Structure formats: C-alpha cells, structure tokens
Image (cartoon, rainbow, N blue to C red; front, side, top):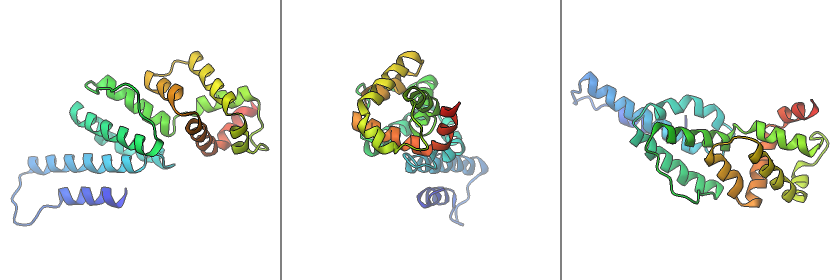
Length: 196
C-alpha cells in the first residue's frame, strides 16, 4: 500500500471523536475509503513490476462497486496509461456494463503482466537463444520482424478487441520497448518455454 493510498484510507475512516455516526454510515465510509485507496494503489502501480501482486488484492474493492464507480476508475486508468505508455485507443469507449468493464480489466492485466503466452509464441517462432542473445540489441535490429510476428499471432489467437487494438496500433518503437520490458520480466519462464 502506497503512502498516498494509506493516507486516503486513514483519512476517510478516521472519525473525529465528537461525531456520532451509526454503524451503517461507518460501513459506507469504509467502503468508499477502500475503493479510493485501492484505486490509488492500482493507478500508482501501472507500469510497475509489482502491479501483478497489487492487482489481485486491490481489484476487489473496484469490481464490487457500481458500474458508475468502475467507469470512473477505468477513465482514470486510461488517463494514466496515456500518460505513462503514450497510448490511447482511437475510439472513445463507454464502460456502462459489467462486460465492458471486464474487457478493460482483461486489457489492463495483459498490458501489465498477463502476456506470457504472447511472448512465448513470438520468441519460439524467432528461434532465439534468450540465454546468450543480447535481447535489447536483437529487438532493436529486428523490430519489423517482431511487429510482423505480433500481427501473425493476433490473427491466430482470439484476443479481445482492446488487446488486439493495443497490439496493432501502439507505436512501433514503444511496442518494442514494451515487448523488451516484459521479456526481461519473464526471462526465466521464457528461457524454459523456448527450450521445450
């Protein structure tokens, strides 16, 4: 939990001694505090390696809220993604149903950590020894080939529309950087997978 998140949580649930609140009001204030605190934690960890540990804990306070509250979180997350990754969807989206919100959460998980199968497929097709290859140099020299492989994998697999749009429309240099960062994060798993 970040300092800002903890401050939000403590600030909302700490009640001045002269206030006489009933238990329902205290529960509501706690729910709001948990939502705001979790929202802050998630937003603060976008593009952070710890996101995959933060998300399963904090997302419950988001997905159990109303669709309107989830849509507010999603809009804030999209702004953060735009700021950090320099990526925006070309089509404005509304998140007015549980299904639409779920698609965003799937995209967010893919963007941050749930992308190992894509990485495995591409590295296997490139037939590169990740133990001995300078990955950064290889990706810089073979950027067009990597993008072509990503396009091929998109056609073969059923990714959601948001994930497919990200993979198809993200700037080439930024995509190579994203691909590199996630390859490094998953290097051991990828070495094992590509040896099989």
